[in-house]
Image 1 (cartoon, helix red, strand yellow):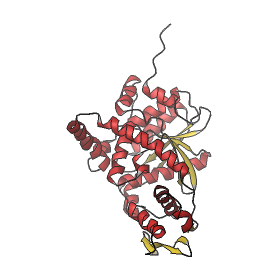
Image 2 (spheres, rainbow, N blue to C red; image 1 turned 120 degrees about the vertical axis):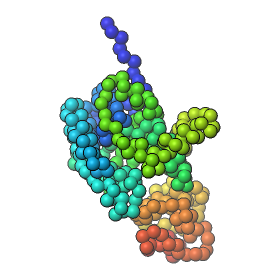
Image 3 (cartoon, rainbow, N blue to C red; image 1 turned 45 degrees about the horizontal axis):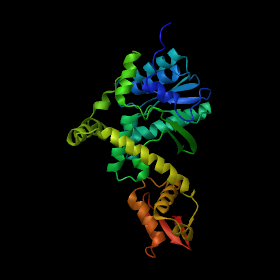
Length: 320
């Protein structure tokens, strides 16, 4: 009797993924690239049959429609439902004054939300892996993010997208790119190479191809693994702080209640409150300015983006 093949790290990651059930319908994002093709194969091999394959064409390359056809054929091969759409991400970025990366991310989340409503399935599985986690940590560090940004992506997270609550699952966050490569070669998986992954105009690609190799060469150590561990530690601490942070909506906040909070929790409450009001691109200066309305007598009003401001009146903070 032939020996049973040993499970790879990809297989183990999918098998041990938290809060994912074989009998539960889930969307799975498949771009046609190596990472998402490996994810889909590993999920199917593990026994997941209630999957809806989702593909968004970003229209960033003349031949991008070939990716959509490839993923459609892949879904047909696995006998899984297929949902696709096309968004002109470059036009969206120009219209919303966003980077291409940010516009693409926003378009994907909007697409997943639409598909989730069609299938009554608010859960999506994504192919982000350990290298993505490291790159995200560095990008957030350079933006001046706090602990939340430095903790990177979580294996399971919840996002409110246009009023819809979406569960985002990332079972491969502990798997490195070379291990995904090995899985693809072992199973002889075909996938489409995205040439934009080598385009140095994108900041993430410069971090991947230039900054990280330079750091590892300069420091003569495994920088990526150290950064991944940092994100993992901060992620668990972020979960704890999130549980200690009072929940707020868009209603006015009582200054007396805010004064009783430690500064770390005050900042988190203010950040959540501004986001509930739809204040875009909330940064450190915005949060600190609103916290100043709590901790200082003057000023009693601070300006925010979108021609709005926060004001302290009658013992409460309001957005006007």
